Length: 311
Image (cartoon, rainbow, N blue to C red; front, side):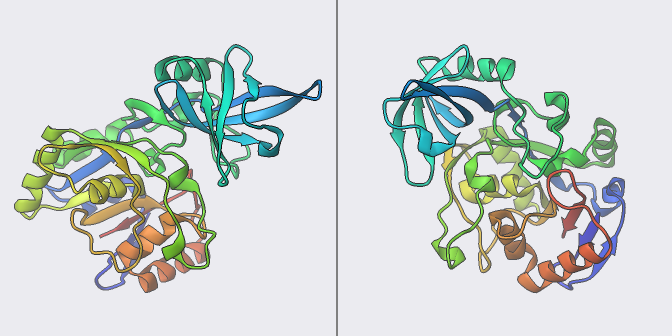
């Protein structure tokens, strides 16, 4: 774990279990309790009498319709039926950004159950070997199903570590952001200001919001576990009555953080919105220096990599 002081730029190197020494009684650890489902499905579509193999990557469901990525996208057109080998999806919309809308004629829960039974674990494309079990791509506190990627900063926490932190007086709070395409879509525009974030569903219940706001008033630190948690807290503003709805906030350098005081995160891909967020929180020069040092020292990057604590 690389520890970065964003005020001084000073850096230190520890193992993650030493996060216990970095936190003090009264600190509030806020975690994203979203749970991944097997969002990657195989299917076929008929074209001129031939069956074309497809990959259907489910993103988000509402009612009986789902946003999805289909590969190869050029093989599907409006009105096509995609045979998912046990469920049929009809293409009812197709956007320029590659996202299609599928009519599934089933509830969200039914589609997720089907996907968990027949789909594949949606690990990032740079992961050579997917985990054997879905539980291996979940945080130990995952609870609310709906994500197509795990909030990987939480992978560093074990039940034992959480128990140790609670015994020290660390307060735990849980929010939800269902990770979708907005999290992992790279920045391809000429400037970061031109990049448009896709909306993702977030939820903060009233009790959680009240406790977080009370901690802020008392001057206690709000420590976000992962960039998804930062987007929940900053994007919703944590109103006293709680929040349930979409957030598409793109946090860029110059943003003034209103809720988050410290951040536990992994090392992110170049040209990602996550790296931009880290630069906004730590300061661009601090972030670049920390990443360069992490490369020199052989830190592991990305989803299953090492951690950084920015305080």
